[in-house]
Image (cartoon, rainbow, N blue to C red; front, side, top):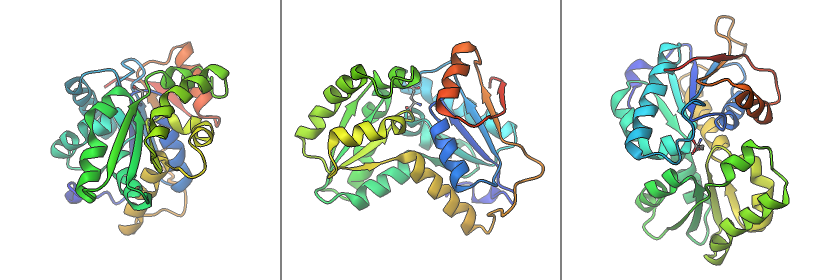
Length: 272
Ligand code: DGL
């Protein structure tokens, strides 16, 4: 991995997302690596990224990464799928630090678990239109077929907390129907918000479809990396506290944060 020259001896994980959704990834990282300090940046002032042009997303992703490095992070995790699918190469080319993102581990897991080679990917328009899953899965196995389905209405529904509403079920049914017709056996949740809808999605797709949750897969990958460097901490870091920065911290943002993460977290307002 590029960035081997700057392997940290006291890892501090910096996670960024377009907003609050990346808290699903932060939560998994804390579950797998409870003693490694974490700095989060959610770009709530400029969210959503999933509707923006690729060049804008790349520019924002670079600024978000710089922000995290300036705040002491030395391992970067791109939690936002729209940013990961559009900007991961640009970030790796620019920054000499280990950069993890949600796409790579999901591609590996999807390729490993599919039996019929038909994989569905749901995400924002930016993620689905980037075609990153088809490109990368094809490299692993030319016989794999990827069927992408943008689901733009799911982000606002999740942020409103409409996780079990009739309207959400109807919209999900509409989005997932084409994937059901395509006989996929694996479905990648290619957006930060979708793990919140996992039980509903599993129910709509049926038990035979294996759901890949990138928030879990990337946390596993980061843990394996830190472990391989002999840097897994057995005690909490005494010097660095977990901090969650957001570029907007208005009343609505604070409410959405509470919907995503139940534990008390230290939040601060800051911008790149
Ligand atoms: N975090 C974004 C993603 O995972 C979803 C919200 C947005 O469009 O910014 O793609």
